Image (tube, rainbow, N blue to C red; front, side, top):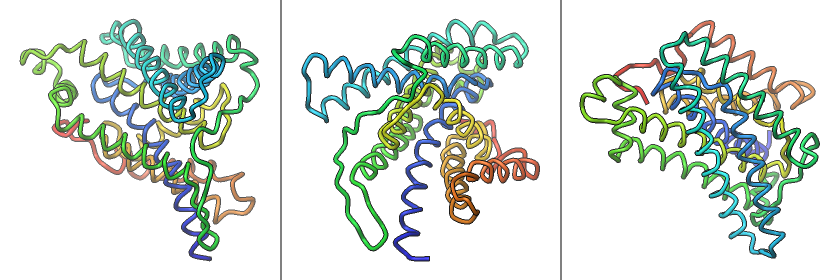
Length: 306
């Protein structure tokens, strides 16, 4: 196989892996601080993408045409809106069920995801139809043999990796990150040390939901289209990536995201009918792997949680 073509597959895999890692990190953050699986996470991503699209429509209506400014405002509005949504979900649905069986939280977030998805479909103008997402990044590219390096992909990849690195710095170099890790390790001890448990949980849900909005906008910019169901598949993939890497570990979630994208790429290249079976191949490999190693690649250690 041509080296340029291999480089193209690697670039595409890195793009997808970054999106999956951002979604998977959200699942791991929620599980880390509250031991909950928030199945509405993918649909929060959908809400973020549609909030960004609605913001774009509003800004265009008032005559704003600068693409960089449009994109920055869309990102800020979508991230803050989903962060607020995540905090509301945590405060009104997840925290009140802390003493209930875990299945209750799982079911309520699963149903909430359906509600969010259907609200987008029913209340967004023509929400049942796929929506074109504006191409707001430079459209040029460099051709090196069969390798086509698009500037927009390069910018999105750098931005996604920057967000992941920023999250690592937040968790490991700030007092807020220390508080989140303390709650993840032992919330009772964290309370006795003066850490406000509720505030830390709300901020963690805001961070995870904001990351989902960022991933949703990346998905829209990458495919130039969004629909009300994008969060369904991305949520399942993000959860599979978090499980694959080891639920409870940030590094595991990031590793799982890139590994799942690598499996999809291998499936698209190696199997007949290419992309038609890439998801089937990737999920099958994850199922087989989880049957062999249920703890994921990075085994959770309480002392290293989140």
